[in-house]
Image 1 (cartoon, rainbow, N blue to C red):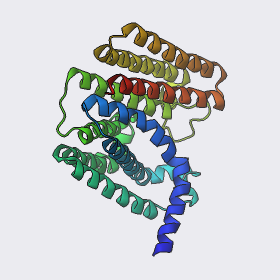
Image 2 (cartoon, helix red, strand yellow):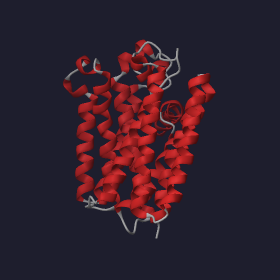
Image 3 (cartoon, rainbow, N blue to C red):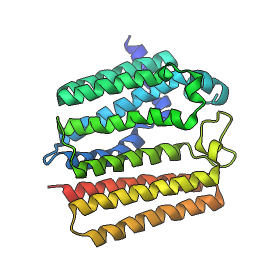
Length: 298
């Protein structure tokens, strides 16, 4: 029994390095968790922050496992080198990992309060429907943009859940609405860049934005989303800080650096410029969240 558990842990470790890099997720989610805590509560605690971070990772893992089961046949045809397809880990073993993640999620929700538990229940119900493709099968997959939008809703519910961990119930003030819009657009940007591929890297699965709208148009949309996210960050800072000019200068500097890397990737189209463009997004969004956290930290 113990040997089997250790074997699954070892295989999951290999799996997560490729499909669910936990360390990267921790550093990606932590700034957003910190800003969410100070936005929603006047006295957030370190313990609440840890719970919110663990719950977020547990839910994202739950979604990832559902995706692996739902996309199994598709990946067999178009992504044969992925961990399940190459035998690194089995669907059954991932299911065991998913059970553990759901138990963690339920325990955290129950300890946080009524609204956290209610939101979590809705999240799990929605993820079940998403896993069943809303009982529409291939019909919904044919509509790539709609398909991605309805799955993206899971991330928005997760943000509400994070709020509920810090404050149950939580109010919806102008500042919180601004922050929710900010995190929503941030989520969309991360989802978009994940499926923004270099020319020739789209594969055969028709599951990238560049496949449908091309490399140039994808970069233009990505650029527009970055500008929107930056504008929302600046709006938040005008609500919480008297240093408007400083915040404007910071916003312009950061978004200009990100756009410079977009331009370089547009011209070079290399793996390195692609990685630099993604890194600039992580840094931009992370700094935005850290600034919000520091401005509200008491």
